[in-house]
Image 1: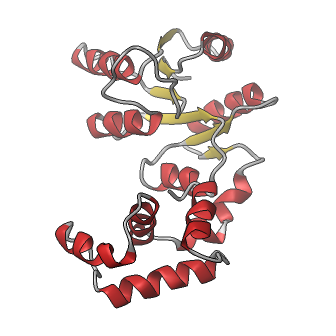
Image 2 (image 1 turned 30 degrees about the vertical axis):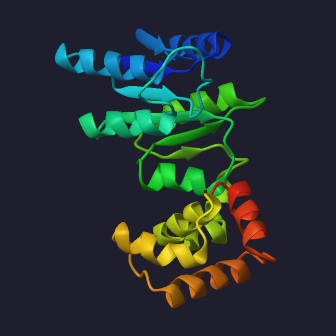
Length: 221
């Protein structure tokens, strides 16, 4: 069983439920933080003391309040911690259900499990923790099919970059000089227009606004 676990979660009720679950499984040392900045500091301190955490359980979204933070989200926290230690096991415990977002967490952040918060999430969290002990990946059963989504598998980083700038108000005419400035290739106007046309056809979007709305709903941007 894991010896030292860090929970990054801003709601006390969830922290208590996760802590109780870990205690039932026999985890002896449990720490938690309501802010990602604090979680990273705790992680760094543990590493300095040569008593590192071997499991991180983190939400993705944290409610903004009066405090200014450097790390606003669970994704950024996981990224920062993974840079310090790629070996730590990571469970994301979140209400997120967008396929592209979840796929990137497994592919780019190399998380080990994704537990969808809901009615059965505590039992699933137990299963996820036990799966990790055998080096197995876990995703909540109600979300497993999302990773098979064609959209999440066929859209690449270039498409995301293009859609993100389009959503921020950059016109197709402005996209070419912007991509050249950012060293994004291909960056010719004709290629960009063809890619947008392909995306509209792929998502069956009537226009650019419709395309942006669809891809936002899917969590692609």
